[in-house]
Amino acid sequence: MRRRLLAAAAVAAVTVPVMAGTPPASADIHHPTVVSADPVDFTPHVLDGTVWSLALVGDTVVVGGSFTKVSDASRQVTLARKNIFAFGLHDGQIRTFAPQVDGAVYSLAAGPDYSVYLGGAFKSVNGAGQRGLARVSLQDGTRIASFGARVNWGDVRALVNRDGILYAGGTFSAVSGVRRSALVRLNALTGVVDQGFDARLAAPGLKRTRVEHFDVSPDGRKLIAVGAFLKSGTAARNQIALFDVGGPGAILSDWYTEAYAPTCMQGFDTYLRQVRFSPDGSYLVVAATGRASSAQKLCDSAARFESAPTGRQNPTWVQRTGGDSLYAVAITGPAVYLGGHQRWFDNPYGTDGNGPGPGAVSRPGIGAVNPNTGKALEWNPTRSRGVGVRAFLVTPDALLVGSDTDELGHEFHGRLGMFRLP
Image (cartoon, rainbow, N blue to C red; front, side):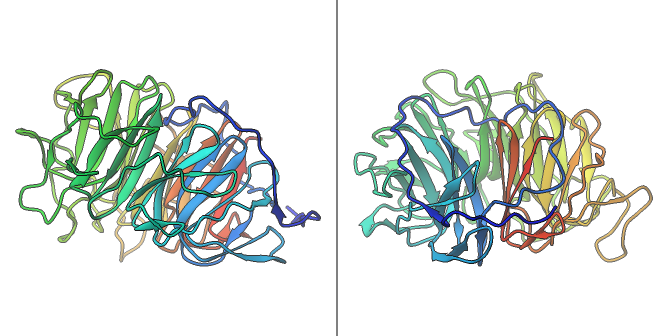
């Protein structure tokens, strides 16, 4: 596709009406078909660092990560933006939104009244102490002081806002003085900790308890978490746990799996990186690293599990890369999109050093699999692999991608890209 240069100014000082109400559900949105493999030409570029997170607030895409410079689509105007910026979903124009955040932004969630929640490794926002958690207005970038939650140390790696409830996961052990290990539920307006909600996660023998990622089902009743933990209360839960969160507490489900009990390469306190519910909540998919090639273990794989059954679960299918990490997953119904620094899909007998095995197909850095079989779909835009894709964002008519490299679909796209439905 010929690149269409933006004729308009690169920065749009857009006045957006204040929007009350509840942001969309955290689960991915259903699409009628697979998105195009040709990325649109109007998205801006992040010129350094890594994009870790994406969120949609109204018609504004918010981008979080660890970076310092962005440019318009034509690369004619470069702007200073430290760890966070925003642009128009439909035209790519960079917003004037530019809060000062002194550390990486690992997670984002849409907030009410045209605001966004930030989670990360920062200690201050616009010069005010606000460790790990903050709510910021997209109108002018101001920190909303009435939201007062702060983590005691560590970071926040995942956020979900549902019906006035904000869930946060990361490496903390307390929030606003209330002890909560790696997972917490807050009042979305005030940031006050929900005293009745405690997942009681623990990681005996590991350096720290960490929720790497989590997702909430479309109906808001289930929460699936992955990370560096081995127990919830007295129950064994190796790297993955499902909770009933439809009531006042966090009730551990008897759904469990031993599929992630086998170790991968030494040094991984967890090799699970992301988890997503399907748009109807009937299943979930986990993306994993591990630096190990295996036709039996779930290292460097994506795996589907059904969410409704109880008791011990085995994966419905496993997509193995042959020794390359997967970091991100998005589910739209017709496709499960996977991102990392993989070279191949359908590669259970390949190895990292010796190349692909029988039946492997090339899918550098990004690809899609059939949600029913786990086999690779034809969708193959390609990207420069780098460390890998870190974030997907599904909108009603597109899939957005955030990473650490600048080639996507055989075109220059600095750490950001968008694939639209045909």
